[in-house]
Length: 258
Length: 303
Image 1 (tube, rainbow over the protein chains, first blue to last red):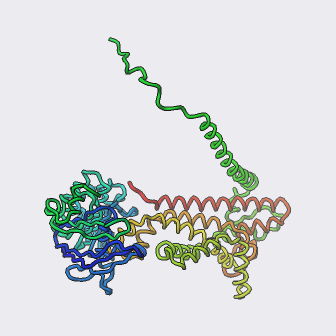
Image 2 (image 1 turned 60 degrees about the vertical axis):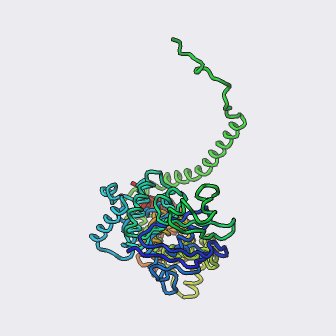
Image 3 (image 1 turned 90 degrees about the vertical axis):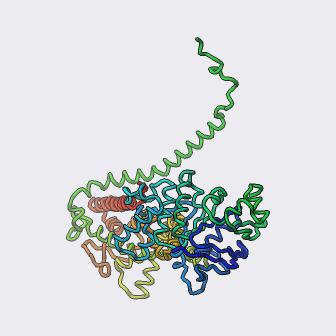
């Protein structure tokens, strides 16, 4: 079930480079939060730290707290694998597993976690594909390789794969940046539906997209090259786009810089 | 009505030039050089194949050649076959592969997935590089010193396999390493993000993605070590009987057979040597074909 996220005093590093400075924010359950900001401002880094994918990069580390319904995912006793099972992620470029069929892609997370019951896997595959609005397009070719789908279909396949493990939160790192407008629309509609069951955080470079899909919006910025990124402002999307509290936010969304 | 309007005439001189003579000449010279290099590389190979086939092909056409050994035949009698040597070559190559492939693949996995830039990884890479430059005779003498002199074991087909392992490991490590490197990190991240542990990601996602190339690499490596001569000369005796026991007794193999029958200076010896040469080439070709067939069957499909 959807859970809330509270980030407290989060600092993120790549080796010696201080990438993100002192971020604190709250994401309520069943909401869509968009991260916007210029390139290099750390929004993707923050997103990746929310399910401990940040530390996968050699030398990367995180300081601070990320609470999922009050439980710190960075506590020393927590297994990062279980965190990622609870907080799913969709990436910028569609990345279906090339060795697997469409169905096997969707159930990969469950199957590799040890679920063997074929009937259950088939059921989950159908549910997840329906959830990702892809079922009608692929139901006749579930055994075909996932790599044969179009880019937009592949991205929805990746969303199906992420929701098949029944996470509480879904993180999306510029999920539409490699897609055409029609596929983008399909994914945006999907995000609106997924909100019923999941807490969603999405990074996007497209401000119209942020305005369309999100309930609240976080603007990140950096003082200059080599400086750490900071959270400038977090507020309801409507307020950010009509009457932002900070000058930098207004400059950015009105296109005066970035 | 006249349709010949201004549109039919060029409005201005063409904006684009022709390919300059200078560039044409350089193109011709480069093309010529490439073709010369290609021919120079191919010629010896074709020549060798024609010679071997012309001299030896007739002997391998009998059923006896593939089913019998030279047991009971003197060096003046035609007939018999190289079954004993085929058994030896395949057995030694197979034992070598069984030992070398798992080690090599695990080393490659360590280097790509775990070691990355650690000091141990660069030490391992350095060692593998050196190992791949070791001449086969040195590998053979090392195993002789270790297995026979130090441990007191008898010369045997197994000792040959051990020497071949030293030659095979670096080849398989190198190819596997390269193939694992080209598996995109995005796939690893996709798996991690599903809550799949790292080792399972490697076993179920990374290796299957690179599998077809790894199989090709292994079959090429097996084909290569089956033709190695130095280890069989030093580490096992020749005999003209069939021996299935890799741990005891002498065991023939095709390179070894060629080397000992070379000393039979009559038509019979000649027939045996050329026949064995054709047989070895056929077996190695077969292995390469088999490798590419398996790799095609396991390669990634999008349809």
